[in-house]
Structure formats: C-alpha cells, structure tokens
Image 1 (cartoon, rainbow, N blue to C red):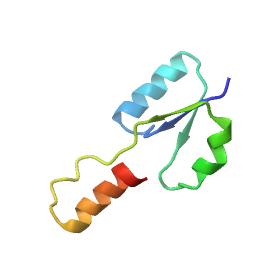
Image 2: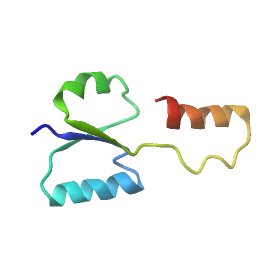
Image 3: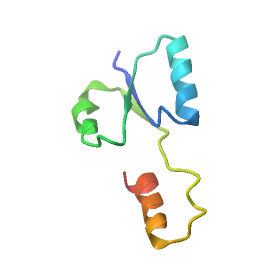
Length: 77
C-alpha cells in the first residue's frame, strides 16, 4: 500500500498523528514547506494527503505584510 503524505508533521497535531501512525506501523511521508517542489516529485508515490500544516499565533501583528504572510502560509501554499 502507498504511504499517506502528512503536511505539518512537526506541529502539534501532526506530531501526534505521526506517533499514532508509527504505533500502528503505517507507512507515511512528510513534506517540508521549505521544498514546495518536492510535492510534484512524490505525488505519484502517495495514496492520500493529510494536510495539517499552517501558520498560527501570528495574528497579533496588524501590518498588511504580516496578514499577507499569514494568508500565503495558510491558504495559497
């Protein structure tokens, strides 16, 4: 069976999901936001995507640049 792809594997939810997958001996891959082109390389090798990545705790800043960065990280990527 093909592995599932986990985005946000180092975050709060993702890290717990990884623990569960390991304990059930399930196959998975992770994706880093630092290499967005990697997705096109691994897409044929996966069965599904569990998207848990996102940017949090940054909305305390109100400048337009920060809002755009938040949207870029959580919506467009």
